[in-house]
Amino acid sequence: MTAPAPDADGQSVRPPTAQHYTVAPLPAAPEGYVAPGMPGAPVTGYEPVAPAHRAAPRRRTAPAIALALLAALLGALAYGCAPLRAADSLGWLAIAQAGLIALPLGRLGGPSRLLPPLGALLAAAALLLGQLTQHLRQVRADGPGPDGLPHDALAGWRADLRPLDLAFYAIALIGGYLLTRRAATRT
Image 1 (cartoon, rainbow, N blue to C red):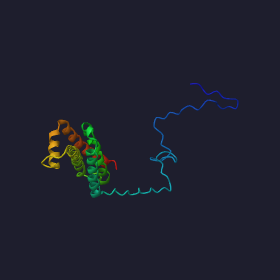
Image 2: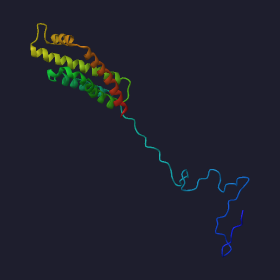
Image 3: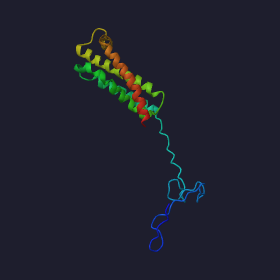
Image 4: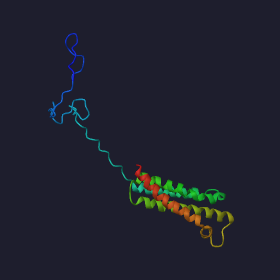
């Protein structure tokens, strides 16, 4: 190693060389000390504010069930009063009926174990009531038979029942259950 070359005033322009220790030097600050302004440094005069206690949303099960029943009746009425020529393509509206029923059940009722199965049953019942209303309209347009209007509508519904209708009932059941559960968790 060479000696530093002195400058005009006798000092070197080179930075001082590193000092090597065989043992690490003692820290200048106590252990656990964090310099002010660094992350983790305690702030003086700061009192943590207790988080505002959010009240749990009220579960309104009775109004939720009442609104879901109203939605099921309105969905069935809309399904049953649709034009008769569109009867073959209306089965897919089962998911819309299920969503219409699931919205008040999930939003107002909250996360309850009772409401998703109830939403599934109401969606399937709305589909059944809508199909019966549609057949009642068809029998009324053709003229009632000797057994009476409701009996003829039920017989016509049984006669027109296809495997695809069972798929629509399955869609209504599954959609009613899942949409009610999803609406309840998004509150």
